[in-house]
Length: 389
Image 1 (cartoon, rainbow, N blue to C red):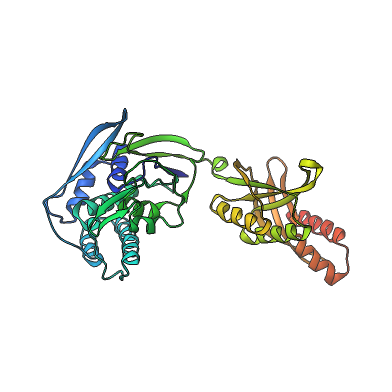
Image 2: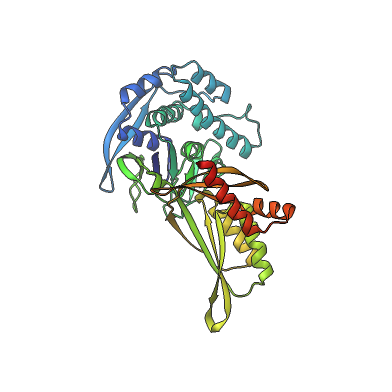
């Protein structure tokens, strides 16, 4: 699996994203040809290698004739649809603009059809978004993961006057996305950058296990005193072993009844946890307690934490990422003399295939036939071995 990781130490903007893609190897000539096909007035892309706090990066400038157009979504769609962009590039660009339009409409109490694209409807913003659609299509990542995003603080002047950072549309676009605290006084994440990353990112979190291939650095225009104003995009391959990573979440409880722990366990499984188990422990002052351990995929972590806190009242949860080794497996129904038994077949290297009956299937058959659960388990495994032969 090819993975791109967006390291947003200093936020994200459209020009920074496109510059990072160019630094990764996106041909500037092909990109300029795609932008030319939009029919925008004298829109030229210029790149330069710069340094931000001692780190080299590519800085992108979109040069164009002055204009005063305030475009609507249908104007931008017309520009994109008549261009020479591929179908997939057009669709990605429109998804980003539509998401941006929905955010603008929400904060201004308007509709998607009526909302004006002010700054983000200008030539440079159109070039940034369309260019990123072209660049991401060229990159061909199977999965895009993004770090938590800092927004900066203070105020910024937009078409509607001075507003707090993050700007209203930016904040709307970042709903549900983890934000990173940052003491930089300035706008680190723009509406364009927020629209791009909130549309294309499959996951937000830490850098996953990768075999790194290449790294692209995109520079912002401003210089921050405390850190380099750059976006780093890291691209690499995840093996099957590395890709199958999950999170372990644990909490110690000494003031919950058994009923609360049991109910919480059921709710965690219903939520989608991969596994939940409890371990008896001895806590401070020799109080008996229970350690609840949950195995969960990354997108479920925040929901697991909320459920644990809400149901048990715990004051702290530990978590860490682990890799799993899973056997190849598939579902199977085995016919026995007493009825069908559902289960799973696993392939063990050097040992062939092994059938494991599902408990619920065995229980239902035991209730209906009067046979013991242990007997039916043995019969199902024996029937599988005979059917293999």
